[in-house]
Image 1 (cartoon, rainbow, N blue to C red):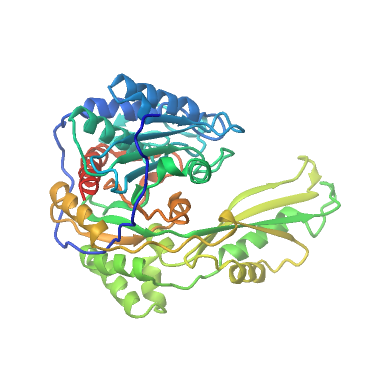
Image 2 (cartoon, rainbow, N blue to C red; image 1 turned 90 degrees about the horizontal axis):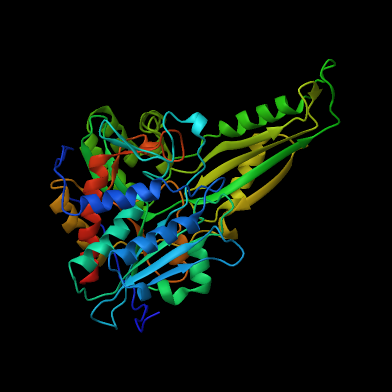
Length: 475
């Protein structure tokens, strides 16, 4: 390590604002440094970092070598591998600022991805494919495009000899998606806090939304994220020969249980973040959907309006708690009645830490007193409260959005999933989700088959993030 102080300072406060106008997606010419960025992005996507078959350490070592070759000082790069998990490597980098007393800006990104099986995909998930204006591949959207932008930002600052007021840091971490890897953000918070301390951190979440016609609706900023809990139900019995069916077949019983839980009608709930989002998006959408949003904002119990708004899964998830079955296993032979069936139901809670009331609701719906049930929750505690959105944070985003996406509003939003932001917020580092990378209502099919994101979204997001980081670094 050099004598560079990887120190932190007073928290930046953050604030919400709207810019209302129109915006649409059009083709853009290549920009300076795009070849370098594309090379970084390609290497990231084509290095398998899934829990089942991948290795995060291999990727961070490649990135560190690339940065050194590009002239980034080796003493300002640290590859950190948890001793008990050699494949779960993390990379921390720092670009020193002029003012050692000013708190740093941290760019946080996870490099691990959800598992992907080649036989299920149309294209090889671990080859970056550009086709009809879209990038395809596992991690193209979640979140290696943003990771590549973080690396690209540091290299551009180095190459352009930028001297910011604040130190700019980057942490590329493993284990955010689970899958067996040690969580890198948690590891760094516990073991290397000094390396990542910052006055503000930026990560995934938020981004940008496109309507069905590809029109930009809003640049979104993650002000809050959901909590998470899983319920594992298990049924056991004596089994027997399949030729003599029993009336209490465990697979059938579990199927009925899951159907009942899947049909729970969770109420519409508004908080400061999803309310601000829907207030800003309603006039942009217009038509029946826009009118339904306005009705729902006035009366969250309006069933007809809720049904219209919830037709879009992303909006439905933003409006309250959700639970769905995600895993099931059972049986032991093709010619035998099952002796054991297990199923997992994953829930995303709008109200952090509200586990016990949710558990009671799920148990009532399951209506299966003989089932054994186990509840697991994220980190064992509710997610920490969201840091405030005030002018010091929203100002640079609004300015960059006006330059890259003129006329498109900037809206705070309630993220529908959880990120590593909570791990940093819990130790006093205000962390927000922002990328400027627009996706349609299918969210790029993140975690699913044929994950994708538009080429234009990635390239514009790269320009947007560079501008945002530079603005924070000079605050």
